Length: 295
Image (cartoon, rainbow, N blue to C red; front, side):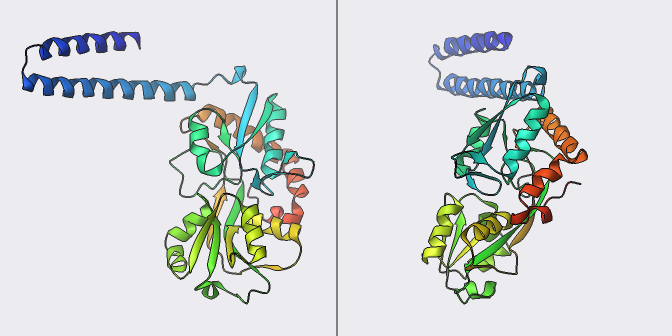
């Protein structure tokens, strides 16, 4: 790296000397050469950064910082005691226990998850995180949940199927898979029939608006829908037609294969010894046993 900086400095000095000749052509050449030098430096530094991520020394790791949406039950949320809990956080805790790491639970703004990951503020995104459509953006663990996007309406809404959503106000979380499903074909054809589509930062607020009648329907993950309906009691219906099907995985910074491998291998150990099934059983009331895909 030091040699590259010295070369860059020499080239910059040469360009300044050429500029002193007063030629407009030389000035243009200087700009082009400087831009090329900066581009080479940037590419080299990016490659070194990726190599550093890939070659992480796991023996020195003492913590695992998990980024999650704190209002995305049953995967991650705050309970009545003010503690962050959930299916994914339980899995993360079990993985950390096996590796002797401290689990750091970091609630994040879901729309800012990429910035949190790229800045190093979190080590991974582990919270009902959809793989489909993001395959090349992250380094992924094996999928562990089969999920689907559904529509929830009030029981007294009179809406019985997706055709009944025409002219209605439909809510969805920002930067979510449900939003993607409604923005892409064939979901975009359905969305075109809505009176409007309202985006929310979290699903708790969206469900409150659904209950209050501010929106007519809500596009949401089946696990979240099941949890919210079980928590709020009767009065809601999940439409039979699904918007999309997908799989959840643990997302790491692209290139961080070493940490992914360590977490993934431990997760698979939890499956082998039955710990995974024990955690699934805790969330059976929310349909988790019918969603997991690791055996």
